[in-house]
Length: 71
Image 1 (cartoon, helix red, strand yellow):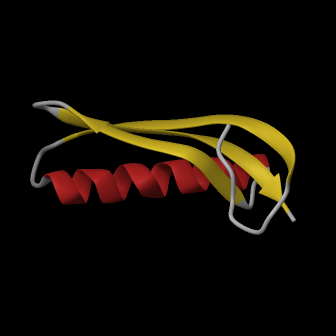
Image 2 (cartoon, rainbow, N blue to C red; image 1 turned 90 degrees about the vertical axis):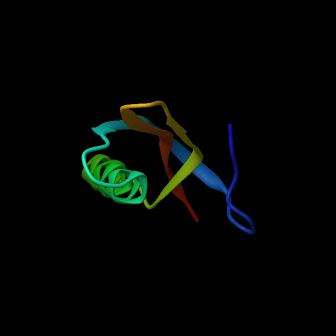
């Protein structure tokens, strides 16, 4: 499990994930996938995402993390 500097994780809400095809640029696909996981985390009630991982292959990018509540 990841951590947030200076904060304590009080609740783990679950995994958030997005995959985007690279139609234009890799940076744009990553940005859109990050927006997706942030939205998912907010909908779960999270105020942080830990253990964020970005992977890419020839056609797509994947963003995965764990939505948590910190204080």
